[in-house]
Every structure is written in C-alpha cells, then in structure tokens.
Length: 533
Image 1 (cartoon, helix red, strand yellow):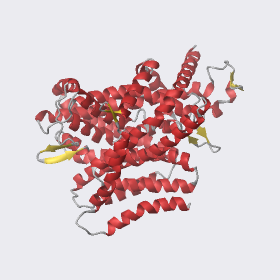
Image 2: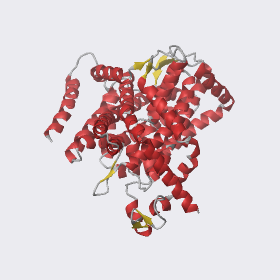
Image 3: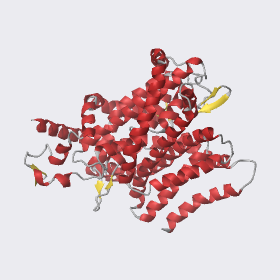
Image 4: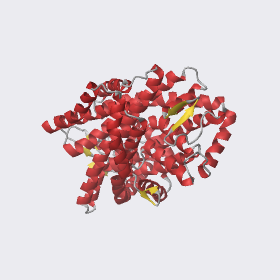
C-alpha cells in the first residue's frame, strides 16, 4: 500500500508546486514544459527508422497484409457473419455446442446441460463491441483526421482507408486470441488481453520465458497507452474546443478544465466493465450517429463536390502536393500513423474489452471485432475527411500548414479539432456548440474504456488488490489533467509513442498463435453449418 501511495504523491507534488508558483509562465505552460522532454524522448525511442521509415509502421503494415492473405480476406468474406453475430443470430449456437465434439457432447458434457457454464464472460457481443468502439472512436476521428489532412493533404485519407481495411484482419486475430486465452476469476470477472494470450499461448509452445517478458512489456506499454492516447490526447482535444467555445484564454484554463473532466471520469470509472458497458452501449451509438448525420448533411449539401473530393483523395495519395509531406512515402506514413492511432488495430488494446464477452467460441468475437476498424476508419474518418476537404475547396488553408499540424484560417492558427470545427461552422449554424459536445462525449467515452484497458494491464503487473486499483485510477486521472494543460504537440507525440509501442510485444503473440485462430475460426464456422443442416 505504501509504495502505491508514494507513487501517487510523487506525481501530485509537481502539480502543487506549479499551482503555487507565480512566475510569468502560466500553469498550462509550466505543465507542458515539464512534460515535453519526456514526450520527446519516448517518441524518439519508439519511432526508430529503417531505410527512412519507422520500423513499427513497417511491422504494422506487413502483419496486417499477412493476416489478410492468410485468412482469405476475412474483412470481406466474413463481414456478414460479423453483423449477424452482433445481432445475436448465433446466440443459440454459442450456448449450445462445439462443432469439434459429437452432436451430443461438449467437452464430456451433455449439450443441454452446459448452456450456462459455456457462456463465461460478463457482457454481450454488442456491449463488448460498443466498449471497444468507444475506445477507438474518439478524437482520433475528429482531431486525428484533421491532423492527417493538415500535414499530408487529402491523399492521407486514402492511406487511412487502406490501413483501416487491412487492420480489420489484425483486429480479428488479436480479439479471437483475447477470448481464447482469457482468465475467468471465481467471481466470474474476466481478465484478458495480449498480456494473457502472449504469456499463456507462448508457454504452450515452449517459449515460457519469452512469453512472460513480452507480456510484461505489453502491460507496461498498455498502461502508457491508457495514460496517453486513451486519456491525455482525448482531454487535450476536449479542452481545445471547450476553451474556444467559452472564450477562455487564461493561462491556467486548461488545468481547471482538466480537473473538471478528471472528476467526471473518476465518477464513472469506479465501476467495472459491466458499468462501462452499460454506459458505452447507450452513448456510443448515439454520439456516432449524431456525428455522422452532421457529416452527411454537410456532404449532402455539397454533393456536387463529392466526386471532386474523392478524386483529390486518390490523386493526392500518389502525387502529394502538401507542403513538407515530401513524397508518396511521406503521405502514406501520415495516413497510416493516424489510422493506426485511431483504430488501434495491431496494438491489441481492444482485445481486452472483447475478452469479457459471453461466448463459447472465441472466433465469434474475433469476427465481431473486425467491424471496429471499418466503423472507425473506413466510415467515420472518411466522413470527417470529406467534410474538411470540401470546406477547403474555398482555399481556406494551405495543406501542409506549419509542418506540425497547425494551419492558418482567417489569420488564426488552428489545429486538430479546431480545424474540423471551422469546417462544420461553414455549413451548420451553432456547430461550435454541437462539435464541442461531440468532442467531449468522444473524449469521455474513450477515456472510460481505456481506463479499463490500463487497469487490466496494471492488475497483470501488480495484482488484483484494491490498493493497486486505487493507485492506477489516481494516476490515470492525473493524466486527464496533464493532457488538458499541455500542448497538442507534446501530448500527441507521447500518445503516438505509447500506442505504437504496444505493437511490438503484441505482434510476438500474433505470429506465434495465428494457427490457433485458424482452428477456432473453423470450429465456429462448422458450428454454424451444423446448425443450418
């Protein structure tokens, strides 16, 4: 208990010191200055380059392409089955039998006696999907897309879509493994994710030490990811739009907005995955539909420009003209980086939420999970991109901007969600209020989902005691404040590094265990065929 309290106070003390100082720098600037060196160092380590390309992106793309080909394009072939699984069409099958057993028995039990025990887990397919989607659908779709287009121009959108389509296969593999190797406690609580399938799966194959080490590294990086991309980056963008809406330019405004957000998130994350699922299954569909309707309205109002926008997306993908993006490789990297940050395919994080599903067939949840990158990147990110590109047909800003993600609109510098907000304002009255609500809802839902991801990793490292849980939650809430106070550059750099760091240990597990996924997929598909017979 003492060591957890010590770690908490170690982080609290700098905040108290900042609050008491009265130098010319504001509170937000002090926090940013303290955080930036750490952010720069972490980013440099994770994004080391091979032949001028960050190795982690090479690994991500190669893996997604390999899984897509190996499993026979599951992102296309099994899309319909994924929809049907979410709808509950196969619920009777999942509670009824295993195809690999005889028609009368399952693991030695008579079929009709095992319905309840076969459905270990805490949430339904839809709840697991909603929880995971809330962790991926966030300000990466609003601010991240704007950042991609500001840096790489319209062509970045094309590569985001490609990354999303390939990422569907990676997500299928990792979420199948998440269910396959999960732990279920005596009280029915589920513990799952890459740290479990890496350690348990590699142990099965005689690589116990490698599995243990890789699992520990994943847990550490996932905790960092929960503090960064799943938390600080979200509060950062929520703060940007709130400050703009409320006209706050006080040097400490970000800090206090962060405090309010931290209190709100803190109230929600007291519950476990069941409570998070109950919140997200209501909020996520509402906010996603709400946001998409607004995008569709803008696109519909400018329908004659849609073909021009699509043409620009395709031509600029191979012949980029954005200042500073350089070449085809440059725009490709921008698009892939932002898409991977948004949908997290390959990072393994979503498998933590999916592992809590009630099912007997691990591949059933893998199929459900492949819908995430499609919803997140192919649909929502593309909608946002079309709105921004259509908006800029009027020459509102120059693609490439300042090279850091900022662009000048009407003589004022905008970045991230601020760019999207300006695009919405062009077509929808009072859209600043609408988009602020959307950004805050996206941010809060993402934060509560990622708090679950990080906490599961924390439990894996430090045990499942209440003291350990409290220590993590306090640290998590402090990063809400850091994200709100620090600059977008520092926060997103740290967030990128933490999300992408998870890819390294996760891929070790995926490449050792993908044959297990093939076996489980066949078992589920055979069960469907048998039920139809």
